[in-house]
Amino acid sequence: MDFDSMRNSDVGMFLEDSFENNPEIKSKIDEMVSTYGIDLRKASNFTMYGSGEKHKGIGILEGGVNASNVEKFADSKDFISETKLGKQSVFSVEKGRHPMTYTALKKGKMIFGPNHDYISEGILMAKGKGTGASDHPLLTSLSTLLPNPGFMFFANLEGAGNVVELDPRAKFMTEHIDSCGLTIGEIGGTLKVVGIMQVKSQESSVQIENMIKGGFAMMEMRKADDRRISDLILGHAVNRTSNTVRVEMDLSIEVIIDHLEKQMKKAV
Image 1 (cartoon, rainbow, N blue to C red):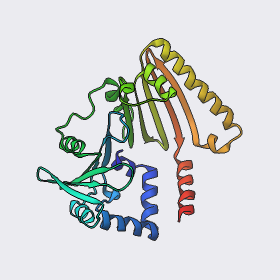
Image 2: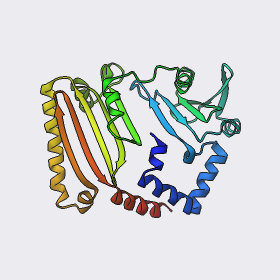
Image 3: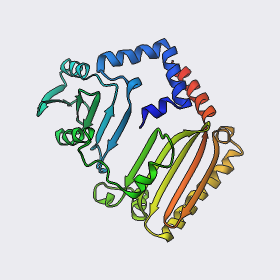
């Protein structure tokens, strides 16, 4: 998630203005900053890595992290314990169903993970020394599809069945799709969503292309009776080149902002 790109979008600017002009929301954000040492208004990006194994992965937040406040909060709670990883303070949260470990680096970065091994790898990644995601061809292509994406997702599905137990639908995906990705960004007043799938065979790619086109056809039938869908979805397309299937959707920024405004009024 690229927060800098999001803040420069129409939706991002609307949210920032709404937060700043709403005393109640602004007070809650300021309280979060002083208590936890995290200011999402100043965050630059958030990245998560994982093998697909449930409840295990590495999260890296860059920007908006005050390491001193993070440590003060940890010291004030009995359910948070502190250990050392070299000279680095690492905090473990024993509360809840799934233990979590985290550390705050001095340069405004915070690393999350299930245990010390993940934190150690996350620190290396945050310093540009870890393995991170490999240079997969689809990942390289995904990063160039939109000029300033706010969100990007990539999954290499090879061997996924060996890591986690999959339901029938997910199992079908891993049997037929080598890798997939999704990127979202704002272009010319629309929110563009682009998804790519690298399919293992041309026969399977044709089947998946037809499945997606069938889903869009059903959506088009619903649009005639549902004004919300017709106003929100401005366009869509499905294209296939050899074993690669590309899906695009254009969503109305105006409708999204209107919906967010209504939900915020309900929440307040």
